[in-house]
Length: 385
Image (cartoon, rainbow, N blue to C red; front, side, top):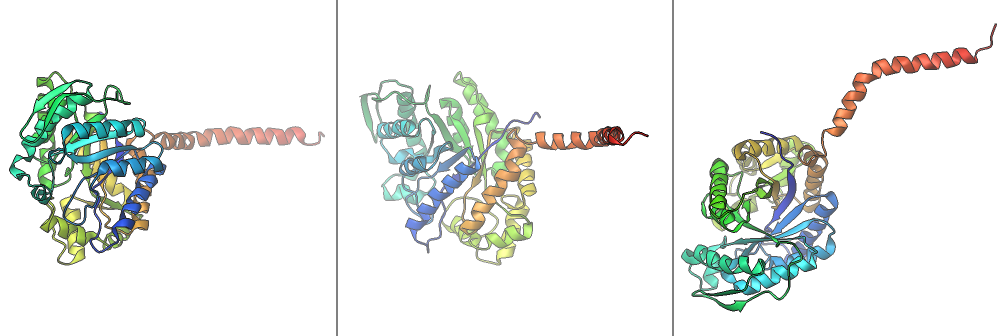
């Protein structure tokens, strides 16, 4: 398999301890995005959640607007806007405005909703949310394509609706949809020409399903006259790296068990630990299952290569931001990724190593000639007898 260039980013739900100041937590999230921008990361995706206590961004659009003012080049995506909670015309209008405000750096991820408690508070039947997402997409996508739309569903209506601004990004802002194991994600991606976000790619079932996930996406795209593009396929997995495996393990003791407990009892991510037992046993379980990378840059390189082999190739690796470590160690982890992991996959690596090897190979012969030149110069300057 020919290696494709892999881009890098983070999937920022975010997750924060229920015991800490949410105002400072949000400020730290914005600081992290600015840090990623300086390090050369390609993109960040920001979630929408309304319950559960740990995932505290209610509007990814508001967050992105603030992050755009603090950054220069990193792309900013909604990960995701929960379509059943919003009128589809207003969603399209907000994203179109963000596309202009960010000068084309906005990406638009959509979904049906990850937390059933959100839908329940809004009086929405969780059994209906996937159908509602499809109904909304049938309005949002043509609106973003510049079409005039009239449509009536049980929960919204649009009458000759049309966006009043042309998009900044041509032909339109990039759209994306999440996928775990269910075929609904890749089918939507293929049907509407959307990118695919495999948000749990390192979990056992999702990892095994990667080839089938892409097959479904390709077939659905072809059925609708489209071509699926692997370079727009994002795979997500949790990562924390340090200079040594021992340092990485010590770092994540800070917050990993609270994160595990959240997914065991509130969220929906199949893990091999609950955060209630021995912390070292929990860390071992995540490493041994290969759900998480807790180690060194070489360990992350090995994980990405494993994902490449299983998937057949993808375009972007997204670290799932988690706050397992304190902020200083978290920043350091991303710095190590930028310094030692990204160059292996983004097309910048290899040249320096090649130049180093070539210099080593040529040194003996060239050093001999150089010394011969020095010896000759010395002889030429010596007094003649």
